[in-house]
Amino acid sequence: MFHIAEEDDIKKGKLTDIYFERTKKILKASGKNPVVKAEIFLKSLPAGYDWGILSGVEEIIKLLSSVNKLSVRCMPEGTVFKEFQPVMVIEGRYLDFGIYETSILGFLCQASGIATKAARCRIAAGDKQVYSFGARRVHPAITPMVERSAFIGGVDGVSTTLGAELINQKPVGTMPHALILIMGDTVEATRAFNEVIEPKIKRISLIDTFNDEKFEAIRVAESLGDKLFGIRLDTPSSRRGSFKKILEEVRWELDIRGYDKIKLIVSGGINEEDILELKDIADSFGVGTAISGARVLDFSMDIVEIEGRKISKRGKMSGAKKVIRCSKCFNDRVILENEKASGCRCGKCGGVYKDIFVEAVREGRVLYSYPTASEIRHRVIGQFKYLEI
Ligand code: PCP
Image (tube, rainbow, N blue to C red):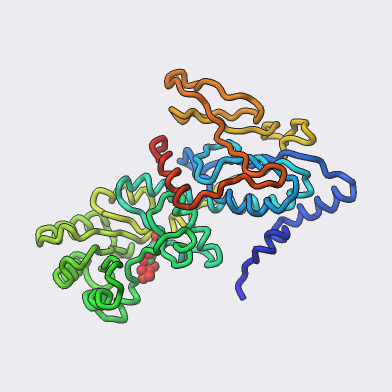
């Protein structure tokens, strides 16, 4: 019915680049199937980014868990990584997992791009809320992955029923322009929302459909009073001018009439820069395309050891590596996986380095703990104090 793959197709390696199938055929015919260590590492971040948030690890481990004798060490999902750092090392016979290179990278690149953008928006918003409203920008088959990654990255809520359910959250949303257009009036639509929708759902009126936001804001506030939780401005770019000025006017008119408790929610083309500009006047942000359509991050997978012999292609350092991170100042080092950690090289903090990789699979046995999305999100937010955008 839809142009999508089944889980089984992924497990059977059918979503791989054809040259990996040909490689498997050639190596089999040549009787070559060495034990290798393959490293997945970040080749580059988008301009202006200093870090990323890892997402997609869980699905890789589930995919590889059915491969016998494989071992995987990696940064757990939700770990901050930096440019040129390895995030995962896979050890096993090449013909057992080489076919999955395309899918492994696919799981990581898109999900980590989304989680990273979500984290940037979350950091920009400070103590204001950020919601992922971008399901409409992606193929519906992957919406759960998109919303899970946005949530892991730090957004406070997602908008689709299944996306929210799979991360054990309640979906968040306000009202679409369609409701207001059909009801014929913003106040009528908001009053109908208040009559029909269960009381625990916040009453947030979308006020940019017909008339000037300032006057619509006053109308809905005067009509619903303290039943109105907030108003959403999704002002089209053709009318936007200074979005901040519009918000300031709306805030002023509501406050001088005693509606200072009504929250201002903004959406429509919002990204972290807009959040930084609007966060002292807006109370929360609905971010769509910027997060769900975030640029994929540029991970690659390369063999770095063959039968214990360190080897790599040009432009890549040989030998399986890991990242050690100072528990005090977040300073990182990339060292060979069998090297020992030592005192932090920053020379100031007196901290010690800790290996940030975990042993996720040991010879086919899964050791990964599969934390919940909420637990991962909590860990991500705990790292924000070291991060800037
Ligand atoms: C969009 C919809 C989403 C917002 C804006 C995401 O408005 O409300 O919540 O926008 P973004 O992708 O640009 O960040 P419309 O497209 O006007 O849709 P609707 O009428 O359903 O609100």
